[in-house]
Length: 512
Image 1 (cartoon, rainbow, N blue to C red):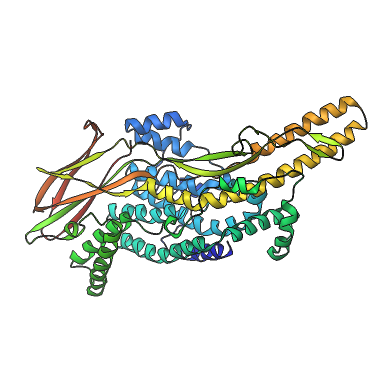
Image 2 (tube, rainbow, N blue to C red):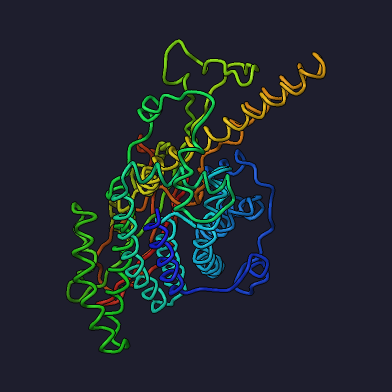
């Protein structure tokens, strides 16, 4: 864990190298670059209907009006930024993404500081610092924001920032994969001990961990651990994407083709094209990206990047001991402390899991003039989130296990003492104390919640394709079809002007 914190701290420095803004949430609302949007009350069903009908302006208004927890400011800014991007408010989207990037840098330290609070409360007590894949796609969508506004230089700069981030992502992957079960359990127990004592110093707390985790009831730890999610491997850590490589290839190719670009910059772009092409082949081996940046003599090229659907959501997986582990034994046996018997109860352990949604869009066809291009799947964002959940679920389960045992032990011990004290006064007070103790013990389960936070406005898929054409002006539309071949939506991108030896990247979306 210490290794991961150290890597994350270093990553925060890298994040600060991106284009940033010091704008706060309040100042963003008054930023001249941000188009005014009248907020509406967020109701999940209404939001889903707006998305399903393609009413993105209404969905944006509800996103702006949504109430976010104070620890979730980064989610709020990224949700608003992505929805603004989808409504083609690229300046407003960039302002929010730049501000979110700055917040991510600051939140890494805050999350580490709040780690002990989470150990005794729940994971949601920590400042949300953005998942690796979210921080990654922040750069990609922001690069598209700048490109769509005609600022290719800033788009390329954001692609270069990602190269620096990936070094840190790889370090996180190695740190997670190298942690042993024993290390994770010791770290979780030490966090609980630190939270319980309020004292600093992991070394001393590790000695106290065993004592802190002792309880007045017996727990079959082998049975509990058999139900733990699998331990993450290096492959579960998101480090790279085909979407990033594709965007970078297009941007660098545009720089290379632009003869107003300085010679040294064009030289770097040429080297990057070769390198990015090799890396893209690793991420998308079935796609011939060379065709997307190769332009025959006398022609120009148009590439289409299409985003479809909204990504699935995390949910809490709650499991109970012993009910979910031992048939015929739904509760722990009654516990007797100082002559007072506490009624049977259970322990609740939680961790996040990812539920994929059916993808409504199954086929995308771009029409450029009379040419029809079948777009190929480039990025499955659902898979990126699934990887992130796999990377976090195991440790979340371990932390939840220690928290639940600690808090339940405290509630049971306090309940027994309260009942004993009340019993010495009167039977009526004893009855009240027994009811109060039962409520307090059950309340521990209510407080034990998994961290299922994520940016909700991330698309489900990105697809791409392109065509070489003679110079001229061509109308462009992108059609989205469901699994039965029915047309779901048609996105008109207007006319594109094709010039000899030039490359144009067009962006389309249908997030239904």
